[in-house]
Image (cartoon, rainbow, N blue to C red):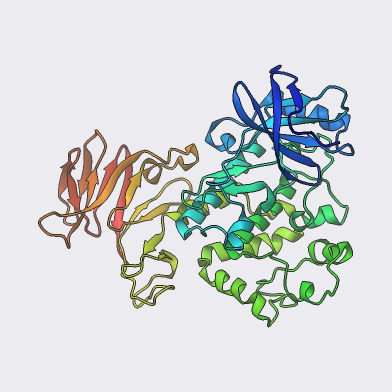
Length: 444
């Protein structure tokens, strides 16, 4: 039975008594309530009788004991804090941090235009943080089992991500689970009954979620879905499991987008995706469908979205972001058709194959930009920036914001030392040695 307002529940581990204040929402497994104690407000998920099994209780206890993965990536999971019970009730639930729903939005709210859609660079941040957190979860030996847009919330202004409903997380290929995922996001082999949830099936679900984030559409919703008059379980099994075909599959055109105005925005948003991102989606939903071991990994998604975030160029007329992959001589802004100038890039070659940062007025150079250890998440340390010469506004320079001297070699072979708070003119061919890393400024 549901909890009543004013009812008291108790934490098993922390031994804290909580009072039910109001119902916040309801899902398939149970209801979510606002609860309070002397320590403040929290949320509580209370299981329905059919879901309040001993296996589920054991799973929650295990998650409470282990805690979330460490670091920034782990902190994005709204992890179970404690198992809670109520006198005379056989049901149970768990407490978790309360989410600020004024700040954080669900993808459905964005797609319904109830909250502002994130700009491209923020969309890259959201996508990176998702891949980063699931990578960390998988490296800790867990699989999520139910990756979907319903379990994602994000700040549309900063890109900060929260991952909700973590009670179905389990040890990869070992833990029992009452939930095998949301059908729209399930890997085809699960739907066909050929596999159970694992880190490999999580990779498919992650790719579907990322595609939904970028294109506001399901990757298999094309002609095959359009022809069904009744969208029931057999129809979904056909489209998602038995015969999944990517709507932008370059070889198989059987599931292309219907000629219907309702599908026009999907094609438009697909066109906004840079070619490198399109290639990854195509790989995820072609060879990745046939061979789970060839799916796009979390690390590959991480590198892609970090690079894309560093490749955005603001339009000088409307400030809309354009991706460098689309900017060539004569290119115009996708939003206002204003000419987009070619910008120089800071190119760093490293063990991951290289990375570049488009340099525009005010660009911040971060520690990760000049270090191959991008996975360290040291994303906030600013080591330099692009500034205008105060006497000659048309001349840009790279300013040293570190406490160390930078060693620079100019195009004509001169060696220069750049002291703290000093800048060097931003000329093509400029070679910089920053904290032991080498980088070169290039302009196409």
